[in-house]
Amino acid sequence: MGKKLQTERRLRPVDLARGHGLSTQAVRNYEEAGILPPAARTPHGYRVYTPLHAGALRAFLALLPGHGHRTASAVMRAVNEGADEDAFRLIDESHAELLDDRRTLQAVERALRDLDPSAVAEAVRGTGGGGRFIGPLAGSLGIGPATLRAWERAGLVRPRRDPLTGYRVYDEAAVREARLTRQLRRGGHPLEQIAPLIAQVREAGGLEPLEDTLRDWHGRLSARGRAMLAGAAGLEAYLRERG
Image 1: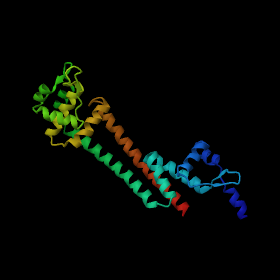
Image 2 (image 1 turned 180 degrees about the vertical axis):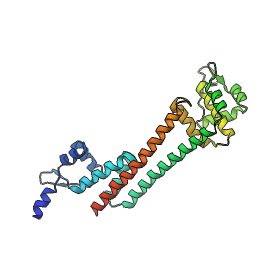
Image 3 (image 1 turned 135 degrees about the horizontal axis):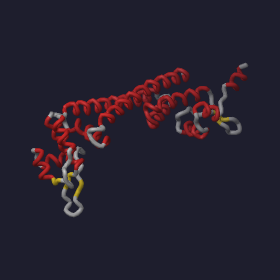
Image 4 (image 1 turned 90 degrees about the vertical axis):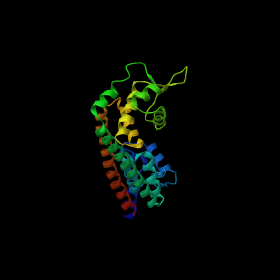
């Protein structure tokens, strides 16, 4: 009876692969990467998996959406090596990254709420020409050229360089970034809070479509948070199965 049960509990690579829409090569790769525990071999060299390997695969696939391939792989390697505390630390770091992303989003939204609508309208009107040099732009903003250069070093403003003279030239997008940065600095926001907002404005292609970008950002963070919950449940099931 015991021998029969042991035989029934044997799984081939194809058995694991079929249940998760994977190739048998992917299953073998996961074992070689330490994501699955080492498999026994038949006298002919064929891999023999067990329900424990199936549990490891389920745990890895559950961790993947919330933590990404690199962290999920490292977590499973640590668990399979008996280094559970290392696995938990990796998961904690992932949660800390998510929290940082949430705080960044909150900072961007606070900065947007502090923007004066009339100043925003002025910022997005553009330069009305082919570009502006640093002196005139700094003068129009009531700041010194050194401040504009500091904002450039912080990644807040990205002027291009004139190919003949090497002078900074601020096109419409750079002028908009400089005006928004100036307004937010007047509101007391530090550069590290302004930087994410400017990055989001660039990604969205301006302030107008930024609302959709922020809504998508919220959605991605919520989806990642829920995926982490599912990953935790999958890993806990594997730890219980492993004993």
